[in-house]
Length: 287
Ligand SMILES: NC(=O)c1ccc[n+]([C@@H]2O[C@H](COP(=O)([O-])OP(=O)(O)OC[C@H]3O[C@@H](n4cnc5c(N)ncnc54)[C@H](OP(=O)(O)O)[C@@H]3O)[C@@H](O)[C@H]2O)c1
Image (cartoon, rainbow, N blue to C red; front, side, top):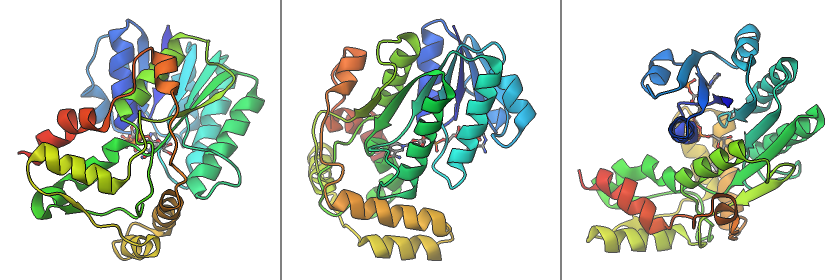
C-alpha cells in the first residue's frame, strides 16, 4: 500500500517510516529537510521534501496515496497545516487519514495544542474520509530533552508538579499508527494512548537513580516560571504559554490515567518506563 507520512523525520514519524518500510509498504516521506529524509534511506521509502505551506507540493505528495498519516508539529499554525493536507488528500482521493492527535483533544481543553487538535479532528470527520485518531499522553522521550542537564547536574525540571501521568514510549505510538494504517478495525474513533502505569516525574527520577546507580533529582518548576523562562530564552509567546498550560494541567492530574489501547491495537503490552530508560535514556546518560 502507498502511505504518505508527514512529519516523517520527527520523533514519531521517523520510527513509523522504519516500521512501514519493514512491512513492505511504499512510503512517501514528507518534511522540509531533504537531507534529513534522505538519511532515512530505507527500502520502499520515497523522499518527498516539502513544506505544509506549499500547496502544489502537497497536492503532488498525495497523488496515488491510499492512506495519509497526518503528523504536524506542535505550533500555532498546526491546524492550518493539517487543513491544507486534508484538502490535498480529498482532492487526490485518499481513502483514509490516520491522525497523530494528542491527549484529550477537546475544543474546551486546557492548552492551545489540545484545542487545535480537536479542531483538526473535527475537520477530518467532516471530510468524509475514513479516519482514526490516536491521542498519546506525555511522551517518555520528552526526558531525552533534559538528558544533558541530568548528566551535568544530576537534576531535571519540568512544570508538571507531582501529577501522576500515563507516560508513553513513542515507539508504541508509532507501532499503533502502523497497525491503524494496516487495519480498518480501529476506524471512526479516537484512542487515548498511555503506557502501562501512571507515575510522577518524581517517581521517574527515583527509578532512574536506581537504574543508573547514582542520584537523579526532579526539581519541579512552577508553570508560570516555566513560561517566563521560555519567554526570556526566546522561545516565543506561543510555546511559553503551551509549557505553562501543559504544566498546570499535568500538575492537576489531567494525565493521571491508563488505558489498555496500545495492547488492544498492537497485540503487545505497552513498554514500561524502565524499557524506555534502559534502551534510550541510560545510554545517553552513561556516555
Ligand atoms: N511531546 C509530547 O509529549 C506529545 C504528546 C502527545 C501528542 N504529541 C503530538 O505529537 C505531534 C508531534 O510529533 P513529533 O514529536 O514526532 O514531531 P517532531 O519530532 O516535532 O517532528 C516534526 C516533524 O514535522 C516536520 N515539519 C516541521 N515543520 C514543517 C513544515 N512547515 N512543513 C513540513 N514539515 C514540517 C519536521 O521536519 P523538518 O523540520 O525537516 O520539516 C519533522 O519531521 C504534535 O502534534 C503533538 O501535539 C506530543
